[in-house]
Length: 376
Image 1 (cartoon, rainbow, N blue to C red):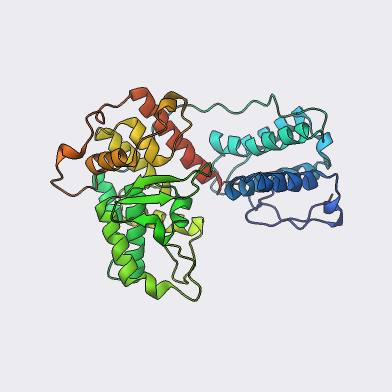
Image 2 (image 1 turned 90 degrees about the vertical axis):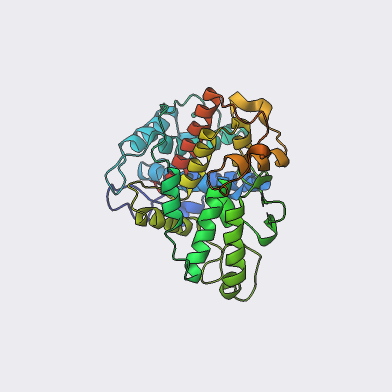
């Protein structure tokens, strides 16, 4: 199965995001690795997996299939555990355009889709055994967050957009929303007009990670900027059919994830605070600052949509009323002079181990997000 796709200009490695593959005539051979990969993708779609999940997996599996084809490995039955270990070494030795290696988490992100694929192949009896079942993944050490903003720094970043312009007002509203709610980049992109309930001070996140809906608080300042954007800007941005997406580009279309990251990254750079980051830094900063201000770990996890932390399995149900009260009391962007009476009595103790786990998960999320731009 010869491959005509371009190679990464730095390391001779197929890069699916920068150079689409042009498969030759035999690429459609029904017993090829790539054909089974496409069946796996269809299976995930039929089982209602998130499109982010199967798209990200397919991107990695496409690169793996190309890597195998260069070595004369065409069929899934030809893939053994030593071959998969060679792929892992390939990831370890790979260098990004800036010369940096892939992080351990990025290496894992490029290996997990293979484990999922071969598990499915074995379960469906397409292969006799699963060569990825005992594959060892790189160890990830616990470390402090790289870049967390202080209250002063985040205020400098929020002040960067020129709110004398329509684009500046929109950007300020988006950054305020990210900071106030701690929602993920994709969750912000997919927000609809009717998802924001200004009267109750909450936002409905539809089908967040794991395809789960959740109701989360949003602060009065973020709501004020959203109102200004809706009144003064969005009507001029809409063009033709309006699908109800809250934040629009100047062309009237929803944002692409990378474009939203570019806006956030540019604002952080222009703030001259000596730190780097993009959308996820607001999520990480919000959680860290609320922890420092005394918010209980279970409330923060409910806001962020973390329900799978082993140390907090008993904290999966928290009422939106309490979430709103804790958010109002502990978020650093609250109005000055807010009374302390809104904080629940049990919201002021922080479990250190649970807090470490929360920050670790946030760091992993950041690396997963960065990993999408580290594809090899």
